[in-house]
Length: 118
Image (cartoon, rainbow, N blue to C red; front, side, top):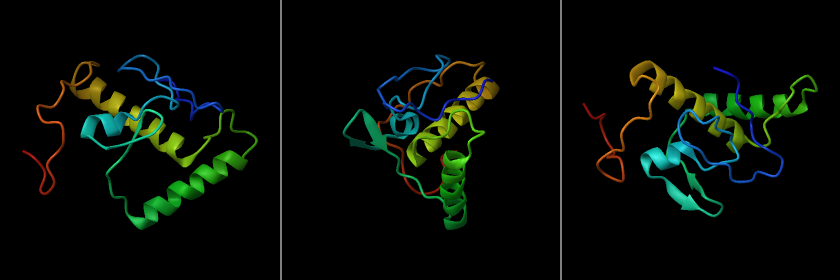
């Protein structure tokens, strides 16, 4: 799997489906998957919690990559970095558990809250 860019300077919409060379300038992958809140620009707010230590590491990583001159394509924002990471994880799950195909659409628009399904 090739590394994903962290977004384009113009942040233009370049949405794509599975296996189409996603870039982070496109629409939010996780927001579409779990029915996140819509925000202007064809993106969705992701309803997820992250522990505080991991969030601080994430912020530190994005800033460090932006300031590191040896990083060929630094993340343009924290959102771009997160979107690239989510796209990579989704593609990996599709490869490992669904023969590289996109998973079928869920029957309900929104995910249930509470204990895991299963």
